[in-house]
Length: 172
Image (cartoon, rainbow, N blue to C red; front, side):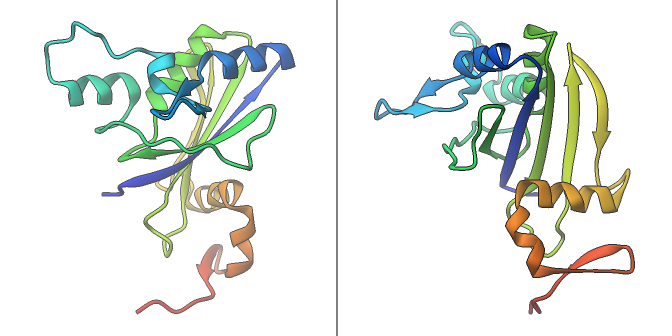
């Protein structure tokens, strides 16, 4: 199982509403610096929760463990990149889309630990509904292209042959 996922969240719609979303999901690192996305700002972990915390996180945020955050130089006015542990926060972003029903949320994710099998997943959410979902099981080539949406500079390291991308490097 993968340990680290690179995620790309793009939001489409009115620019001021997009800015409202990004302002509402920010948090702070322990040192006080701003983190672009804080899952606890989207759906707070309950203070009085007495059950299994890992289960709550997985069910509500879409992961088995807590998340790592990284502010990324690729962020723009409508897109942020962030890292998560053990999974992509599909359910959290789907929930976020219910809070801003006039916007469309496009979430792409790829396993950072698997550089030979370059694939990603993509979901589009609108007001809590999944409008589109692509995974390697559904469409392997599109799943590979999602990887390049997240890592566009890496495409030069791959060759397209037999309807798939393969690495130009040999791995032992």
